[in-house]
Amino acid sequence: MSRLLPYETILNGLTVDRAQALGEQFCKEHFPGHQALVCTHPDGHNHSGNIHVHIVINSLRIEEVPFLPYMDRPADTKVGCKHRCTDAALRYFKSEVMEMCHREGLYQIDLLNGSKNRVTDREYWAQKKGQAALDKQNAPMIADSITPRQTKFETNKEKLRQTLRKALATAASFDEFSSLLLQEGVTVKESRGRLSYLTPDRTKPITARKLGDDFDRAAVFAVLEQNAARAAEAPARSPDPPRTIKDRLQVARAEIAAPKQDGVQRLVDIEQKMAEGKGRGYERWAKIHNLKQAAKTLSVYQQYGFTSPEQLEAAVDTAYQKMRQTSGELKALETKLQGKKKLQRQVLAYAQTKAARDGLRAQKSEKRMCYQAS
Image 1 (cartoon, rainbow, N blue to C red):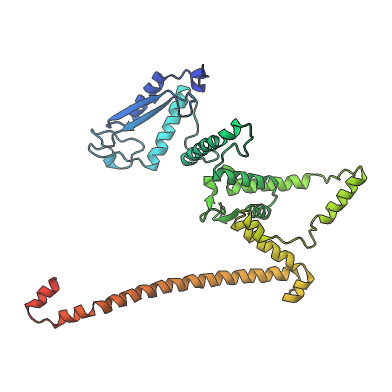
Image 2 (cartoon, rainbow, N blue to C red):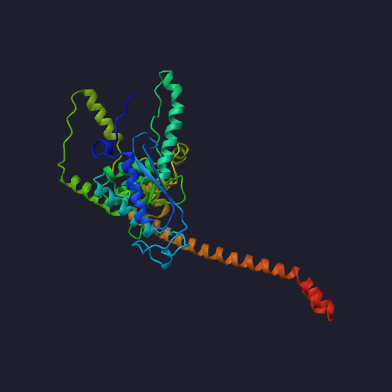
């Protein structure tokens, strides 16, 4: 079976011999004084026909070399010293590779900024292995003419990206964006002008920089502004009138069952939702939601002494501030207790060695020196 030739071979005439020559030239220019091994592979791991070059160098320099742009220490040129692969050197090598590809008329990618979705090598291979395992699991079902429920494997980061895109497609403000994410169990945080996202299965949030360019603060607020402007410009469309009596009854039932913005909505069954697999973020949102809905009823106002939702929200904010203050005091007490425990261990060690020290002081002859040496 014939296979389509890769892009570079068809348009730019890239061959294995030409790639090998370019690799050797790059190695001589940027790794002088180092023993090197230059290998060219005619294909990649995914059988795409991607011709690429591997360069392996002996880090120990065998001769003195001139001072190159990526070097910053005198030892980087001396014989017998090792090659230092710093961040500045890596950026210099990447820019030189891009310049070489541009000079030779070859296709190139932006090596300095990376992919738009920030898919790391670890995530890439996790997706490959997960897809292979899923295909192996679905193979017996496909053989029995059964359609599998899931045919495409997605990593946790990719699922989070899809959740963020879904929320960005409808949200018109940052509060609405945060609320939509909380319903999916994702908490968005803003710190020092940067956004991070915490999923229920993690204890440490994922920064927007690791998810892609579309999810940093500037991109998110730009999309939210566009959604708000689009919603303001869109004319209000009147719904089509129902055609039959059955349709009218369904519309009437929907209006009765629909939650009123100014009325009381149904409370969320938190235990049931948690049993269905919702995360901690959804639990926090549901608690606040239930509290706000309960506060709208007159009986709750009279029972707890609130007269308006604003008064309840103010009380909630005050309680939250007190909780944070108490949490800070608790952390200070925990630190103080740790110091006390350390002091307690020292006191116990002092009490256990007191007899030995008293015996050492009681020695007045040469035995004292022997006792002290032992």
